[in-house]
Amino acid sequence: MTKQKTITLSYANHRQQTVVRIDFAYDAKLTAQVKQFKGTRWSQTMGCWYVPKAQFDLHQFFETLRGKAWVDYEGLKTTDAPAMPEARKAKAESHPKEQTDVPGGYREMLEQKRYSMNTQKIYISYMRDFATMFRKYDLRDVTKDQINRYILWLIREKGISASQQNQRINAVKFYYEKVLGRPGEFYAIERPRKSFELPKVLSENEVLAILRAAQNIKHKAILGTIYSAGLRRSELINLRIQDVQFDKHILYIRGAKGKKDRTSLLSDSIGIVLQRYMQKEKPNYWLFEGPGRTKYSTTSIARVLHAAAEKAGIRKRVTPHMLRHSFATHMLEQGVDIRYIQTILGHESSKTTEIYTHVSTKSLAKIK
Image: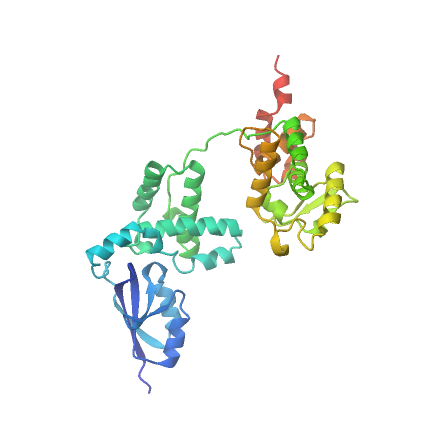
């Protein structure tokens, strides 16, 4: 009977971060197995394989090596790694974000749940901050009180907004509830009170001034399509040529917020602009393309709008989402049924759409 190989796990400090050492007598098959584990790297100075502590998942490691080696993890039962020299420790403290990545399985679960790329980036960024703050702990042992104090620290010291507070809480909850599979009641962080903010809108004259100021046919088509169809930036850049139905005066929006498809309006005037744009630019696949026929970027849309607004003499800050808000408000002022506006915008609840009644001049005009 062949004697099973032994792998010894222990904490170490390497390149200003706490890592898990993976020590074993050389074996080609075992090496291949260990290298498959996410985050595994070879250290020439330590002479062994290692994984950053924040990325190490002991359960997953056991599953990977089940039946292939015996794992001695006595060295992980201590909560602290060997002391770091003071000079290196000071340097590490000054660059905390360089030390810690998201825990193992976090990225993969975001992909499995099919979160949008934008949401994945936000969650990963905020989870990195969280893991860095608690880099001396096993994240699975961090308590609810510690997390609440962390959120409070972000509010007081970093001045995060209520919206960002919610996003950071969601990023942390995703780890404990989706990655670790713990029940929702395990983790209850105080949520900020919802603030009631009116949407910022432009007048019809301001929108027309912006569209006239955009001399480039492509830029005019981009801004005009966002406004006339009430689109989000992400929805605009995901439009394909085949999503434009000129004969039916319809735009097909696929995989919008909440992974839902819907249709929106294609007005006569913007239809003409789009046709001229397509004849001139000849897009290949995406309706609006960037360099190398790639998908147009959301930051480019913001720059285009900023330049047009500045040229039109509009001094206030104008964002692409204001065009969407303005579309809904102007529709309401023209007497369009709010339920139809809700469908066009893709709102799940009519309460979301009703906010535009607070900025509609038609509603104010009724008050004598």
